[in-house]
Image (cartoon, rainbow, N blue to C red):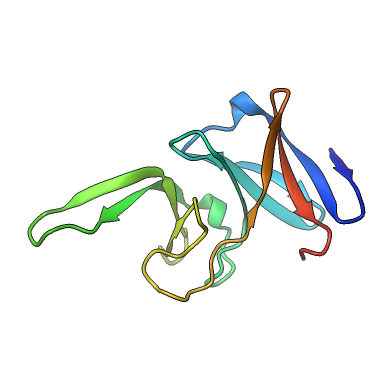
Length: 130
């Protein structure tokens, strides 16, 4: 269900309580597949279901955390529900910013603005975004 003006479509992603951390709820907007999830802090995040590296369906990847910078001999894991790993090649993307974690300058995820209104989640999709 999409409500639109000339520039932006407002796509209904479903009830707010159904959008949870750790997994994507999939939505179709025109020809685009978009996954929406929550970060560990409760913020909504919507991404195009296309890995910037080789066009894999990124929303089929694991949503979890990553290994954090740490001292030699120490392993620290963190940022649970903030990172998505590509199911094809393992590239890790920050769901908060869309950036790839380990390759500076690599293309990032396509993020879409979201709204939570009256218990429903909406994704705002530009009509120009292909």
